[in-house]
Amino acid sequence: MEARRVAFEVLLRVERTKAYANFLLDAMLKRFPLPERDRALVTELVYGVLRWRGRLDRLIAEASSRPLKETPPDLLTILRLGSYQLLFLDRIPAYAAVDESVKLAARTGGPGVKAFVNAALRTIHRAGEKFLQRKPGEDELSYLASLYSHPRWLLPRWKARLGEEALSLLRANNEIPPVSLATNRLKASPEKVFGTLWDLAEQVEEGLWVPGFFRVKGASSLLTSDAFKAGWFFPMDEAAALPILLLDPQPGERILDACAGGGGKTTLMAALMKGEGKILALDTSERAMTRLQEALKRLLVRSAKPLLGDARNAHREIVGPVDRILVDAPCTGLGTLRRHPEIKWRVGLKDLERLQALQLQILEGVLPCLKVGGILVYSTCSTEPEENEGVVEAFLKRHRELVREDPAPFLPGKGEGLVGDGYLRTFPHRHGTDGFFAARLRRVR
Image (cartoon, rainbow, N blue to C red; front, top):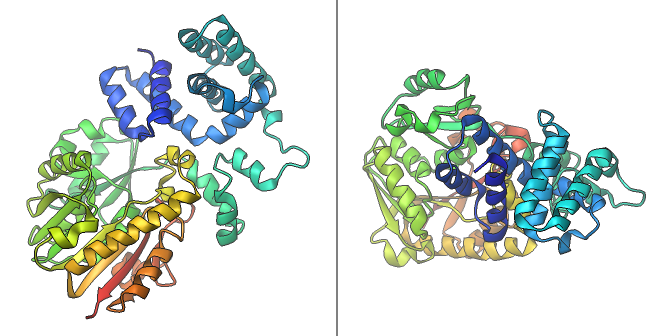
């Protein structure tokens, strides 16, 4: 199966099933082995279309003879693929982008569909830049939303909080993020990993914020290397490690990782604890539990115990008190748009309210497990206050036995540039990381 066809299938399934693009892309590339050049093109097309869907749809709406809402998903996906190649990929000749899109259309419809795709893409090629200009009387935020390819509802929120800096966030969200790797200190030293990465990549840099993290470029064989298989390192954004530094787990303690996910956070905690103590790695997803168990085995994390269960019921399922709790809560993920651009087109205001309720339920479920004097760290990969300080402040009002502590002493460089109003916050445009939030709470009675 050729590259454009694979990209088409991935994008269509992302649209229809609401799955994450990275998982579908990995599965499709394993199912249909392609030369390295074609694999790179598939990845470029999938993430490029998802990042720039808003701008592409503006072009398609102008060039198309039918409204976007009345365009079938498969046809719209073909138009987006073709438009992306015309607008962003100079190395692909325009005639090739159009012809390959018409061939895709031929597989999904009759001659009329081929003619429609051909006409729309040729119009975009001729007049694309004109379509990107602001129209007379067009609302500024609507124009910026399409130009920078973000949903319209986010812009007034970000502009109210960030001012003109909001445009920098929009731009940063559309950038290709660095490949960020964390050292597994249970198996290798940062120095050893650094030297090994130079053999695998064209460029290696130390992380900006967290010791033992590296950013690499030009390393297509990283995840098939012997060092990766041996568990020396694993993919993780630096910002995701900062809440673990706030938690500050100590050797011999009993820790609850309430929303454990794929095992990266658990591994970092185990390393800080020098492999001594016990980490209860809880997650409600069977798929996540499978990934967690595989990762812990590869990374040699013997101090963690995977548990399938719902954190909202942790007080019923966890026997005995724990010293510290990490709640890296389910959230919109709006801080990870560089890595998961499909999220932009899925979440809305109603999701903020729905997820805030879930986040508070999780905190209520785990709090009875925490001993007096223990630490609870709440974190999300969201930029939105409803999921962040809104949750923490509502929770503290209910629980006077908790106090919020300054996170700065637990962060590299005393948290300079990372802490404000007593909370940890990171942004892609400020810190070169995913957008994260965290708060450190102590139980005093």
